[in-house]
Amino acid sequence: MIVNYDLDAGNLTVKPNYGTGIYEYRLVTTPWQDSPEFSGVSVGETIIVRDQKGCLFFKTIETLGVETFKNSSFKLYPNPTEGKVSISSPQIIKSVAIYDLLGKRIMNINGNSKKLNLNVSQFEQGMYLIDIIGENNKAETKKLMIK
Image 1 (tube, helix red, strand yellow):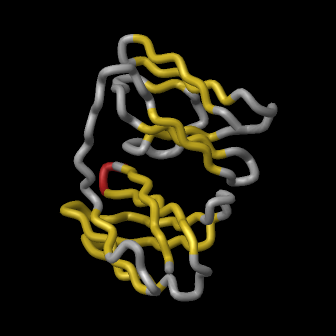
Image 2: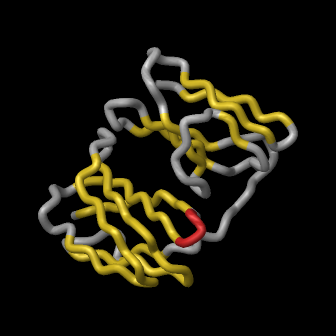
Protein backbone atom coordinates (compact mmCIF):
# COMPACT_ATOMS: atom_id res chain seq x y z
CA MET A 1 0.00 0.00 0.00
CA ILE A 2 1.16 3.51 -0.72
CA VAL A 3 -0.16 6.12 1.68
CA ASN A 4 -0.78 9.53 0.13
CA TYR A 5 -1.94 12.65 1.94
CA ASP A 6 -3.04 16.23 1.48
CA LEU A 7 -1.68 18.76 3.97
CA ASP A 8 -3.30 22.18 3.89
CA ALA A 9 -2.60 24.71 6.68
CA GLY A 10 -2.12 21.95 9.26
CA ASN A 11 -5.21 19.97 8.20
CA LEU A 12 -4.35 16.48 6.97
CA THR A 13 -6.40 13.98 4.97
CA VAL A 14 -4.88 10.50 4.54
CA LYS A 15 -5.59 8.64 1.29
CA PRO A 16 -4.60 4.96 1.15
CA ASN A 17 -4.42 4.08 -2.55
CA TYR A 18 -4.76 0.33 -2.46
CA GLY A 19 -7.82 -1.82 -1.89
CA THR A 20 -11.19 -0.99 -0.46
CA GLY A 21 -10.72 -2.37 3.02
CA ILE A 22 -11.51 -0.81 6.35
CA TYR A 23 -8.61 1.28 7.65
CA GLU A 24 -7.64 2.83 10.97
CA TYR A 25 -5.42 5.88 11.17
CA ARG A 26 -3.16 7.62 13.61
CA LEU A 27 -0.21 9.90 13.88
CA VAL A 28 2.63 8.84 16.17
CA THR A 29 1.23 11.34 18.70
CA THR A 30 -2.46 10.31 18.52
CA PRO A 31 -4.56 7.22 19.33
CA TRP A 32 -6.10 5.08 16.56
CA GLN A 33 -9.17 6.54 14.86
CA ASP A 34 -11.56 5.61 12.01
CA SER A 35 -11.39 9.03 10.36
CA PRO A 36 -8.57 9.79 7.87
CA GLU A 37 -8.66 13.48 8.82
CA PHE A 38 -6.39 15.26 11.32
CA SER A 39 -5.87 18.90 12.33
CA GLY A 40 -2.86 20.68 13.80
CA VAL A 41 -0.42 18.52 11.83
CA SER A 42 3.10 19.64 10.95
CA VAL A 43 5.90 18.52 8.67
CA GLY A 44 7.93 15.63 10.11
CA GLU A 45 5.03 13.79 11.74
CA THR A 46 4.45 10.16 10.77
CA ILE A 47 1.12 8.79 9.56
CA ILE A 48 0.36 5.17 10.46
CA VAL A 49 -2.40 3.29 8.61
CA ARG A 50 -3.60 -0.16 9.75
CA ASP A 51 -5.69 -2.31 7.41
CA GLN A 52 -8.32 -4.85 8.46
CA LYS A 53 -5.71 -7.63 8.50
CA GLY A 54 -3.55 -5.68 10.97
CA CYS A 55 -0.83 -4.69 8.47
CA LEU A 56 0.81 -1.36 9.29
CA PHE A 57 1.92 1.25 6.76
CA PHE A 58 4.00 4.32 7.58
CA LYS A 59 4.48 7.66 5.81
CA THR A 60 6.39 10.70 7.09
CA ILE A 61 4.97 14.08 6.11
CA GLU A 62 7.66 15.84 4.12
CA THR A 63 8.23 19.22 2.50
CA LEU A 64 11.44 20.02 0.65
CA GLY A 65 13.92 22.07 2.66
CA VAL A 66 12.13 21.69 6.00
CA GLU A 67 13.15 19.35 8.80
CA THR A 68 11.23 18.89 12.01
CA PHE A 69 12.64 16.94 14.94
CA LYS A 70 10.45 15.79 17.81
CA ASN A 71 11.63 14.80 21.26
CA SER A 72 10.48 11.38 22.31
CA SER A 73 8.95 11.07 25.75
CA PHE A 74 9.36 7.27 25.79
CA LYS A 75 12.76 5.56 26.16
CA LEU A 76 13.28 2.01 24.85
CA TYR A 77 16.48 0.20 25.94
CA PRO A 78 18.59 -1.74 25.27
CA ASN A 79 17.91 -1.61 21.57
CA PRO A 80 18.93 -3.90 19.95
CA THR A 81 18.20 -6.47 22.65
CA GLU A 82 18.84 -10.15 23.19
CA GLY A 83 15.74 -10.82 25.26
CA LYS A 84 14.80 -8.17 27.80
CA VAL A 85 13.80 -4.59 27.05
CA SER A 86 12.71 -1.68 29.24
CA ILE A 87 10.38 1.17 28.41
CA SER A 88 10.48 4.28 30.58
CA SER A 89 8.75 7.62 30.47
CA PRO A 90 8.20 10.70 32.63
CA GLN A 91 4.47 9.94 32.25
CA ILE A 92 2.43 6.83 33.12
CA ILE A 93 2.58 4.14 30.42
CA LYS A 94 -0.99 2.87 29.92
CA SER A 95 -0.37 0.12 27.37
CA VAL A 96 2.20 -1.42 25.07
CA ALA A 97 1.59 -3.55 21.97
CA ILE A 98 4.31 -5.29 19.96
CA TYR A 99 3.79 -6.03 16.25
CA ASP A 100 5.82 -8.03 13.79
CA LEU A 101 6.57 -6.38 10.44
CA LEU A 102 3.51 -8.02 8.91
CA GLY A 103 1.39 -6.03 11.35
CA LYS A 104 0.38 -8.99 13.53
CA ARG A 105 0.06 -8.08 17.20
CA ILE A 106 2.23 -10.56 19.10
CA MET A 107 2.17 -9.06 22.59
CA ASN A 108 -0.15 -6.72 24.47
CA ILE A 109 0.62 -5.35 27.94
CA ASN A 110 -1.52 -3.15 30.15
CA GLY A 111 0.63 -0.96 32.33
CA ASN A 112 0.14 1.66 34.98
CA SER A 113 3.72 2.64 35.60
CA LYS A 114 6.47 4.96 34.40
CA LYS A 115 8.70 1.95 33.65
CA LEU A 116 7.92 -1.46 32.16
CA ASN A 117 10.30 -4.39 31.79
CA LEU A 118 9.43 -6.80 28.99
CA ASN A 119 10.74 -10.28 28.22
CA VAL A 120 10.87 -10.63 24.42
CA SER A 121 13.20 -13.67 24.35
CA GLN A 122 10.42 -15.86 22.90
CA PHE A 123 10.41 -13.82 19.65
CA GLU A 124 12.64 -14.61 16.69
CA GLN A 125 15.50 -12.33 15.71
CA GLY A 126 14.40 -9.37 13.63
CA MET A 127 12.68 -6.00 13.62
CA TYR A 128 9.46 -5.32 15.54
CA LEU A 129 7.26 -2.28 16.14
CA ILE A 130 6.26 -1.24 19.65
CA ASP A 131 3.14 0.89 20.05
CA ILE A 132 3.29 2.75 23.39
CA ILE A 133 0.28 4.64 24.78
CA GLY A 134 0.83 6.98 27.71
CA GLU A 135 -1.44 9.04 29.91
CA ASN A 136 -3.64 11.53 28.05
CA ASN A 137 -3.53 8.98 25.17
CA LYS A 138 -0.17 10.29 23.95
CA ALA A 139 1.04 7.55 21.63
CA GLU A 140 4.34 6.70 20.00
CA THR A 141 5.59 3.88 17.80
CA LYS A 142 9.19 2.74 18.09
CA LYS A 143 11.27 0.13 16.28
CA LEU A 144 12.79 -2.72 18.30
CA MET A 145 15.55 -4.97 17.02
CA ILE A 146 15.90 -8.42 18.60
CA LYS A 147 19.23 -10.13 17.94
